[in-house]
Amino acid sequence: MDDELETLLRDHYRRGADEIQAGPDLVHRLQTAGREATVAPVSRFRAWTFPVFAGVLTAAVLVAVALLLWPGMPGRHEAPRPMGPPATGTPATGTPAPSPSVPADEARSSAPPSPSGTPSVTPSPTWSSPQPPIPSPTAKPSAPSASRPPASSGPSTPRPPTPSDTGLPRARKTAAGAASG
Amino acid sequence: MSAQEVRGAEITFDEFVTATAGRLLRTAVFLVYDRHLAEDLLQTAYERVARRWKRIAAGNPEAYARRVLVNLAIDENKRRARRRDFPAGSVADVERLAGAPPVAGAAGGDLDEVLRGLPPKQRAVVVLRYWCDLGEHEIAETLGISRGTVKSHTARAMTALREHLREGRADGR
Image (tube, rainbow over all chains, first blue to last red):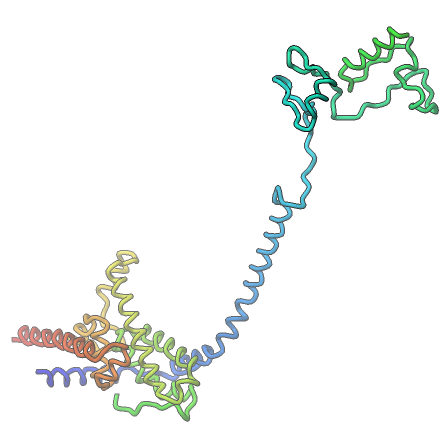
């Protein structure tokens, strides 16, 4: 049985082989494929050179842009923000904390604590813009401002309020000037 | 396959291809039963041989090429078997493949049907034994399996073929 089967298989393959021929086109194709396979590593390297270079360049540009534009990076100055009212050093409400640098005796002698415990908050001019010079009709432009302050130059002529002033300190000053004059 | 195997010591790669293309193409067709697929697998095998030509030319390049080809065919047969389990095409594609006539380039007939139905390694063992005339030791080297496994694959394949012959004779009566 096995011999018969083996003979049958060998005949079967022999008959099938007669129908299968490798033509010259196929042989040429196989030879060309083999030849190309031997030179493939170099050409593969060349083929990948440009995409790899482009990828590296793109990554470098992205990293550079990220480093330049990333907020909070060291060595990068932020744009100045509009400032709020300046802190006076003491909270508006509540007891002032004793500073450790000032001795207790000195602090007691220099400033007695107020009975209420709340410090007096004095209004201050805004920090947004420096105060422009106040024009006065009697003041000459050539006169030095240090020798004669503009507040005491003309007590008889009231100075018009400027828009940048908060009103209260200057009003006090002018009132004091009027009382003394 | 009675022709003497080509030794690569004193021939070029092109001469090697010219001398062995026909034999290896038939082997590939018997393994996969598809002429075009067999040509593609043979091309892949020759490309691998060409890459290592300097190293294998002094030895037996045809045996190396055959080993590459057989293993490629086994992998391809396994892949096709999986694809058959999970058809990915349309209904028309599946119907066309199911009713496909015997592949051109391979002999038709009942025996072909039985051989096509064998598992990939059993089919490879049968082809190497009865077409390539290889012994058990050479088949084991080619497939990278032990001689005992070769024997068991051969025995199972022969049992299936014997069963087929018995059924054929019973139907003939």
